[in-house]
Length: 81
Image 1 (cartoon, rainbow, N blue to C red):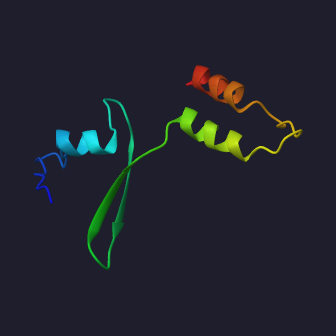
Image 2: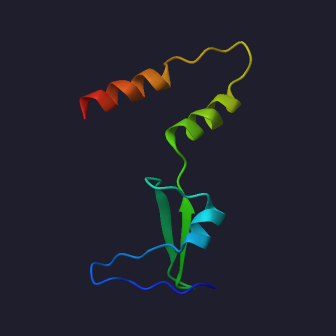
């Protein structure tokens, strides 16, 4: 177990050892969930868009083409932001 200190701004630093084990790099996003019954905070690495696309592509059945090109839609959204 590793101790983490919360700053006056409510921020915490994930120690390098844990970042390495989790595969976290600068700019990565994490998901946090809190179990009220056990008071355990769980942090996990969020999937990148590309990882999510790969997962979705693995669900594709042979011979069935997607109705939309997800990558194109994502890029269009990004250019509007």
